[in-house]
Image (cartoon, rainbow, N blue to C red):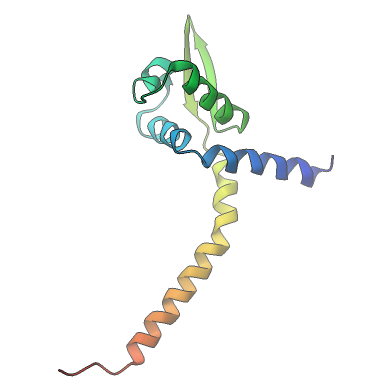
Length: 116
């Protein structure tokens, strides 16, 4: 497989991981509260722990979280670096909408005010 193909597969895993609300919430919790044991994360969700473990596995395989064992606990940590690629991918769309909204603002500024 080419380097481009490998990169595209990694991007696909990241976007697939981000497509799920539970996984996005896990990332938010780790971003705001720092590294946490799986049980603390599980307490935030109305699901069985094995279900959350599947979500954590998807996040781990996408490189968005890392897992460290501390005794019998598994501690999860946010790995934000892969999100830079998402930001890079979204940037042209952000610029597109900013330019469109700027154009709309300029059009509205040129329109005469309605007088009642």
